Length: 335
Image 1 (cartoon, one colour):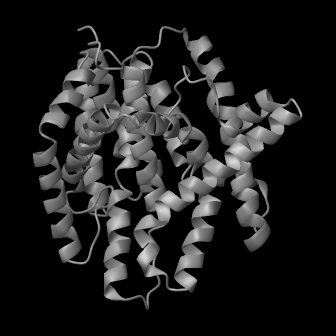
Image 2 (spheres, one colour; image 1 turned 90 degrees about the horizontal axis):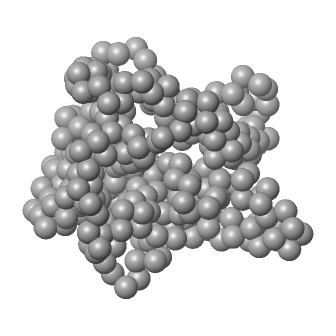
């Protein structure tokens, strides 16, 4: 199926990434004080629920972009040194130092686990596993079906706390989303899916809001795995696809595209800003800003990134700075 003139796959994916990034940042600013008013607990649970959407979306589109690579094994992984490994290591080290210099634990083990397991950077670890796991078998439907079934089982067992595996680093807890991306690309379904979700956006939104209200009414939030969350996750992903399709046609879509282009860099660098904003608003009980926290953190992170880029350009090291910060040419999709 050829892409219609009204559908730009490239810009659409950037818009999707913008909303996925907003979700991830929401997850990292959702903590509220124990002595906070009940409505602030509700707002915190809303942010946590929204925060469970983004990782699945990123894995889906990582699978989508991965399927069509024409590089050899060596070429593909060599390219990831520049586009993933270097900024991952540099920004992860900054994150580690930010934590270790304040709380202690300045050693190699803590540095390595911060980069690979016990931080939001676990996503990149699992992504590398997927790149290796699916290299030869991404076009094998039987293999994809088997792994998808195992993934659903793993998610269910994790939700029931029957798996003694750190859940974030368990590839089977994320494989279903990566495989969906592979299949969407294999059968050229992205445009159809985007238009379908846009057409039925009101219904999809209503169903997701209903699910969210059920969770919030019993004092819990939508997590990655618990309480049949995979159903909520799939509706949430459909909601993101529909909203992104709608926003792609707006006159101000270039703002979403810009954020999508910067999503990898913001993803790598936002957590210190998230910690600062969360602690500040909690300390002064600024509950009325709770839902605005993700936007404030994204704006602060983007401002910091652009300031570094501006200064690096002045001293003519901007190419190196862009590599270290995870900012690349827009035709190089990484996440």
